[in-house]
Length: 185
Image (cartoon, rainbow, N blue to C red; front, top):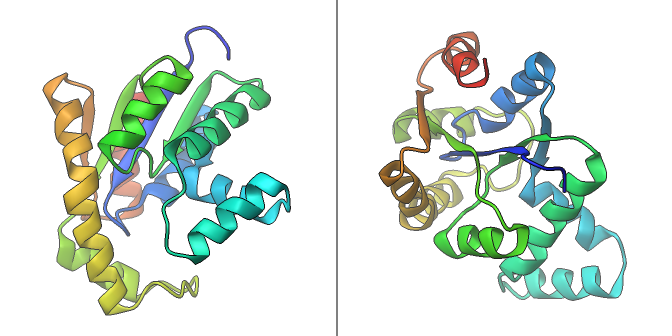
């Protein structure tokens, strides 16, 4: 990995605008955007023995070991040849974060935390046109609970060491980006 990379973890509840804002950051500031979930899904589709094993685990409702996801992220960062990274939706929990520190050997530069009231997130998710099959009210509420239980402790930990850039996202996409830009200037 390149020396002194800028690694930004992008966290926020489902529907808080992580993907939308990452696309704008990539366009304006030249960062490379990785979604841990997308990398994992791509790995599972690869047809390799390791990918097939992960696919089987996911189909059985098991969680893929953090080492697998972190190594996918590490390899993607190395293979990109770049030095500025947005890692979207990761770490999902403290164990993910600890594994990242151990495997990658460094922490993030800061955490971009997209904060939005749950009722607004719910409306956004129910109004999505991307056709995600997990955007129904029951699943959405389960995702909110998992986020509260597992990801908020990560955000609270980073807040203690002043690595959170807190952005309210209960406004328009452009208004959010106006708040995001100073974090990258």
